Image 1: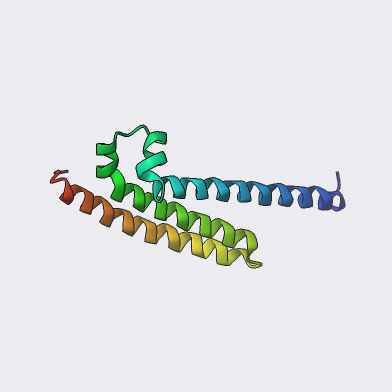
Image 2: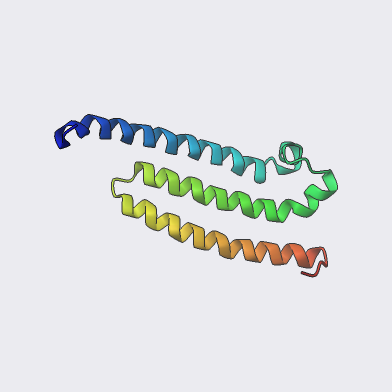
Amino acid sequence: MGDGDRGPLLGKLAIAAQVLIALIALLHVYFVSLETVLFKTRGRRVFGLSAEKAEIMAPAMSNQGCYNGLLVAALVLGLLHPDAAVGRAFAVYASAAGGDCAGLAFSRLMCANKTRI
């Protein structure tokens, strides 16, 4: 296979990659809904938590849902924006921001439950 023969193959691979990115983004939309809006109903059943444990875990799961929401935004931006560097930069920023929020939510969870680490 010469260099000139790779064009159609690369085009098919690019389409396959875009389809996979879209599917992963849709999965993360489902995760966001389970971890935020539906957590105390369907989410707690999916994760196998009692109502009491779900109440305790709600702040941490909400944070996880927000982080997954940032991942959805990064995936969609990378999929739709013509400059791939913009999507990569947003993904790095979103990961850093999500990590900062996770630390705050975890410390609030520990303080609310008077748990020592």
